Amino acid sequence: DAKTTQPNSMESNEEEPVHLPCNHSTISGTDYIHWYRQLPSQGPEYVIHGLTSNVNNRMASLAIAEDRKSSTLILHRATLRDAAVYYCILRDNNNAGNMLTFGGGTRLMVKP
Amino acid sequence: ETGVTQTPRHLVMGMTNKKSLKCEQHLGHNAMYWYKQSAKKPLELMFVYSLEERVENNSVPSRFSPECPNSSHLFLHLHTLQPEDSALYLCASSMTGGSYNEQFFGPGTRLTVL
Image 1: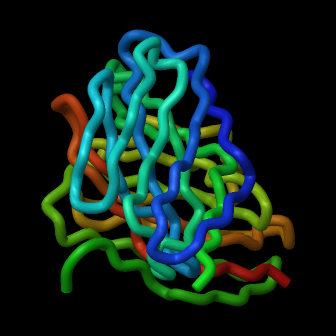
Image 2: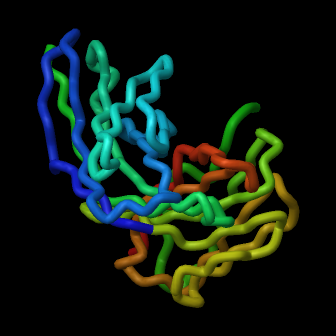
């Protein structure tokens, strides 16, 4: 699977929007963009995924660049409970084993 | 009980001990995974089972031995471990096939090898 690059850490104020960037310049046409997050002392949890179009769900929005070489996870109003490590992962749709390759992620800190 | 459960949550063992980690999923999934998360390192995929058959063994040392007796249960048998094997061991499950199937993770077992 192609590699992603994320900032090591970011800070946000509570109740403000957060934009978490991810670069994936070597993305291939069959790669889906996934985001998971890991809250302290828990296993990772799915946040959102997309292929080409922007996506919204109850947790977040995913904005995908037109050339697909980058994407941004948007938390519309950060809460203290959103403090976590956020992972941007590419997965080849032809990956029959549904395997995920995690990178270092971005540690999001939310200030009250 | 719902979701993915792991037992024990914490385990301390000596290098000569034999122990097993257990994972159970109540989601009707047909694929299960073991990951290792060491301090300051990304999650590493260790093993993948799909339809109870092992489909991935990511160059894991033989002192780790997985077992998947049915689609709901996954074990990781440990023997003669090293201190550097101390880590958080995470289990996950998902469906396979289709365009995308999110993985659901358990809370992990924190393993300390003395």
